[in-house]
Length: 201
Picture 1: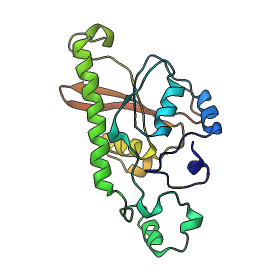
Picture 2: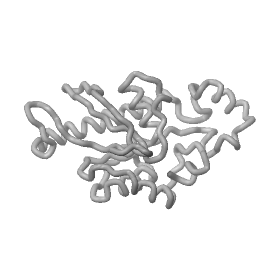
Picture 3: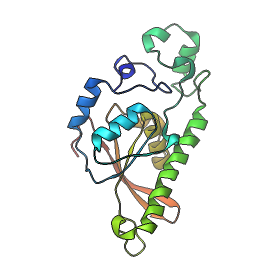
């Protein structure tokens, strides 16, 4: 949680730090500590990763930056209410591109590029150190954490499930636990469940 989050603002390219309350709230999220950790490059991701996994230095992937909200950046509903451009975006159920921001399809491609970049790193590291990653009989058994933005999560989950992107909106400190299978470069989602919030892992 950042100050912009607390005020209901569209926080994309703005590089905010966590608030005190945001840092405290992360204490209730209990995760395994032995995860290979990835993070987006922005402060709120890196700081979250450092608090959740204090003994790990996250691998930073620039592809996991939040979308640029363009003219809506760092504004909230109250400030944008009455703006005809914003109203058109609302009437589209959020399907239009953000004015003067990053195109939705460009953001989707970038996020999925980061997702496959992460999986490739894990696969290559497993080849170099199979004992550490539990590789047996051609299988790969490892646990990875990706500390990324809500928009990135929505894109990845929509891609893996084939469902609508808005089915996967999350709040601060929430996400999904995924079980993936891999055959060469083909990754398939076997199961998933929400984590964070009131969910106990």
